[in-house]
Length: 116
Image (tube, rainbow, N blue to C red; front, side, top):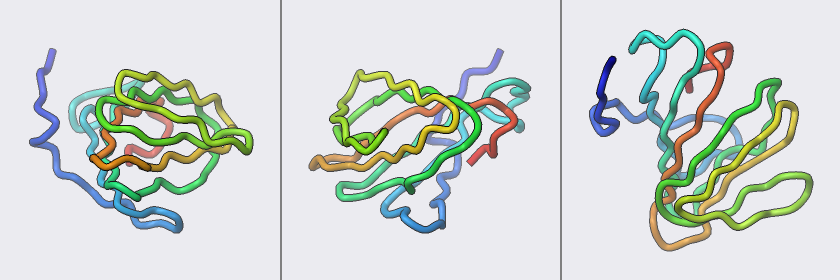
């Protein structure tokens, strides 16, 4: 067993088209001995956005703090702290922060996916 403090993980700023004001941390990944699933934590600045993208794995998201919107099937859906989101494989999606505070969410992915 391991107990980790996510603030001790080095934040990385993804650099791809459509990313604005996003910092991600691998909280549990290969370095911590995970073999099947990875846990990532993202912080999105007010007005920030993840890229609109699609991939062949599902993932689960838990909104820890803040508010924003999740894009799916041509519609933006409002989300806020304590919401859980399931994104199936091959579904185009995007997250944006439309609130005044940092949007913080956990993202769980299979180990076949890139850690960050």
